[in-house]
Image 1 (cartoon, rainbow, N blue to C red):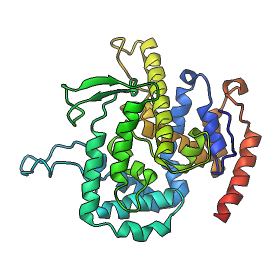
Image 2 (cartoon, rainbow, N blue to C red):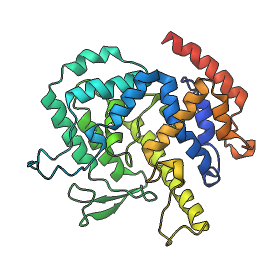
Image 3 (cartoon, helix red, strand yellow):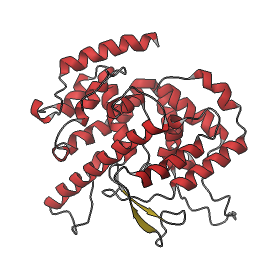
Image 4 (cartoon, rainbow, N blue to C red):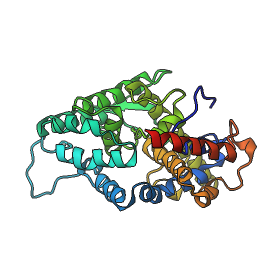
Length: 329
């Protein structure tokens, strides 16, 4: 991808190198290895505190979507809806986001000014909107719209327009619902929604924005939709490539079967969320000088396989300059 500006976040050039490996079908294993470094990079970035927050975030009820309530507990239809509380937003999501990226402490008073009921109400509407999108590992560009549940067999297919307007509108609706919470923008909204629907939403990391968006980094809904669209495309390509490999090995039971590579997801195949994690992991490895880790990803890569030909010297210079800029932020 030819850029009109120089990325400012450390490690973006290395992440772009992974992104530009072509054809992607020849490099699924490299993407797998990139994603497998996520936990280690979380620790490198924020130590035990970020490791704890990352685990707490993944353990939120929101992340365990559509759980069946205990048989001995009587719940109303409204009680059964997924939700996010103010405490979960402030103590887990926001703290995780600020430690993983750049802290926006000026937003804290605004975030604290929300009532718990307003956070619960907005999150319920956001999750309900997100529930309207149904995807499969290799057809994330097709929406099946039902009556609110992804298991609704009565839903109908609605193919996207060329610009992905159908999918884009549904994603925008879910993000906008979360943004009704004071102090929450598209980036924070994506931190919540990618927990609930990782198959639809990627997280809006700075490094992922700069890697995928051909313009100056920003946090608007339009930029998020573009970044998320790119993550979705890559996830589809990786799933298709992994499925083709398995079928060639004789592992596929039928033409439409899908068996993802083992480390790509811990099961379930690639998602937009996992694509973002892989790119962020490579950027963080580069920013922290993990040459050994990077070599396991890029070992044996021919320069002709990289569209744009980002070299290691360029990456090193970019990282050094970016670190200087980051210290002044």
